[in-house]
Image (tube, rainbow, N blue to C red):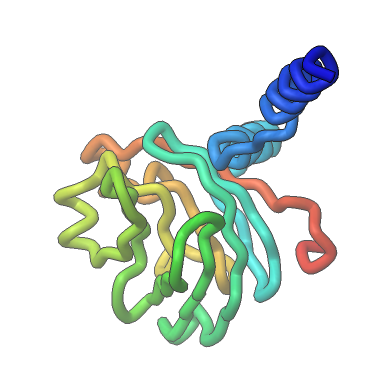
Amino acid sequence: MKKIFNLAVILSTLFAGVAFTSCEDDEEDSKENAEKQGKTELQVVKGGEYSCSNAVKAFSFKVTDAKGTYIDGTQEVTFKIDGFDGDITLSDAGNSYLIWNGTQFVSANTATAKDHVKDIVMCLAYKNSKADYTITSATVNDTMNGLGATESKFSANNREANK
């Protein structure tokens, strides 16, 4: 009986190591997806799921709302980032940059983004855009690129809404 108990403990310990998953795996998947497709700008749609990889952070996100148009400067894109509470909105009229501050994602206006240029992981394209709801790397923006922005790569996560 004692041998069976010891065997059960050993097997359950081994199985726990195999069955355990962590958020870091999700971050690695996000990075792999984004680097595989390697786009520095990507048009997003409501319901679409995407990945972003940057030197400071890799993550996946789902667009929960997209409205307005870049033509008249009324774009708003709202999304939920995997593993984080709450929604974030980027807009033409307000905060059009997404920054990773080391512990959380923060939307920022141009002045704040310039002060934290190396932490920018995403921008909502506006004046130089050719389509609604285009997210870009900060390196696409000449001003931010000149200040030393790091490149972000994006991918669609091949879900039904992205087709």
